[in-house]
Length: 111
Length: 113
Image (tube, rainbow over all chains, first blue to last red; front, side, top):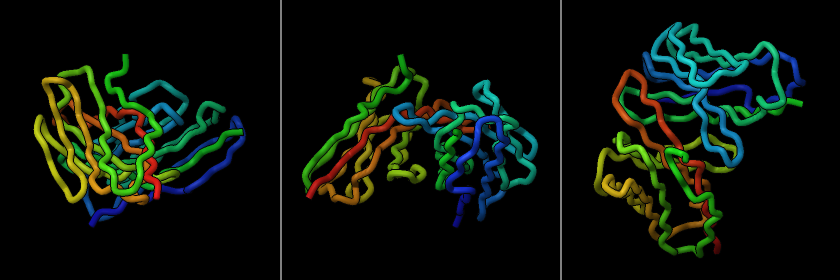
């Protein structure tokens, strides 16, 4: 069966510091991968998605970036965090169907 | 206007009640409809997935889609305290290379003893 991992689970970072969140999927190959941010009362906002290694599509302009160095690894990064980057970050994967399966999430607090 | 509207609740019901959760949407291009359950501080968990109009049942859960009214529902029978969570509806438009979901903001459900 497929499993999706995210780490760290919780992160507290100062404004202006860099960020690296990692997501890995097990038990499948060539999945579509997604990064979302969830803010209270605002639902899930799609940030990036990837259909293959090195292929990244950005959905919203921001100071975040994503990379997919390996088939089942998806990384969310920032060079300088802003207060507004605080939130719950979720990674998801999808097979060839329309469904998406989410990881446990990373709670980021920027102070 | 948001593409997907969902009442945020909270919705409080007694144990054993039938729960009805709903979403409306504005874009008739949506074809695939999903319901996710999200416990506090956890990732969303896929509950139901339906294509086009009709009903789908899985245990105590029934998903209903009415494309003519642009309205989808999730019914929970014999609700349990463990059903207390936020329920998110989601939908997508096509079967392109990457499915992109549009989510409602979620309805918080509390099932009381």
